[in-house]
Length: 405
Image (cartoon, rainbow, N blue to C red):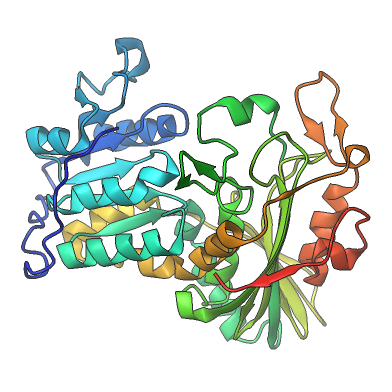
């Protein structure tokens, strides 16, 4: 996608560029940038909200225009262009949803901000801490709202778990662990030129298991501990590995140092038996497990039987619309992803992911994906004990690397 070179006018008073919120009866014009692949989910969500007269799909930004058969029924014939700036100008969009390659996030978000257009930006917000700061500073100076697409942070379970912690349900918090055991076939890494890359043409991408497909684990763990800011994370240790023939990592773990205790996250895309990812908050007298894709919480504590809770969820685009219409609190502004970006920066600047020894992985039946025997148990143990792979005795894991992103 192309963008015009439009300066962000930081000297303009806050909100001077931002359009006034539309009346509740008038649908908000929205442009979607990146409508294929994962963007299809955003297209379907926009259709849902358009049926409620909340939004109107004004345009689609893609390098190759969508065919009529790619646009869900009921969305009409939105304007299409490969130039986001021109499309925003011609459609008069008030909101843009950005679901584009990671290296484009900051430039496209600032292209929108310079026009007073509010932004819902897919995670991760940027491929480096410097780009993240440029993004956060730019949207703030432009006076527009920016929501980062960590959908798990729209779960009503997040404030509910924080209340349980504040009430002392599990005693003093000692840390949090996160586990994600997923499986992706080799075609996953051929879906786009940037897939599975650390860099592309000299530009940072950082498309690793911890920073993109299972990024929600770290962001959610930090949110549960109320340590989401950049200054809340004071150290990062990483162990990055790859079973697939890619540049980035697919089987990794990291430990972040916070004032509420360590946050250890472990993830793989080479699971033998894929399962639901979760975050576990440890305390001196119990623990809370949150399966964030299911909005399900399990409370286990001394002297009580286990208690399970189901929660609702607020869609992040709906929250952005409510913020513009009524001033509702934005759930995931850029400032709340600074701690997560410390991890991204540590992965970006850390040693290149090491290839697992040939004997440490196998080709699954069908021949289309690789698995790492025993990795499912390692991921679980890391979340349970707040330990890294090397500390759990994985034969292929070298000692951790300590950095601060």
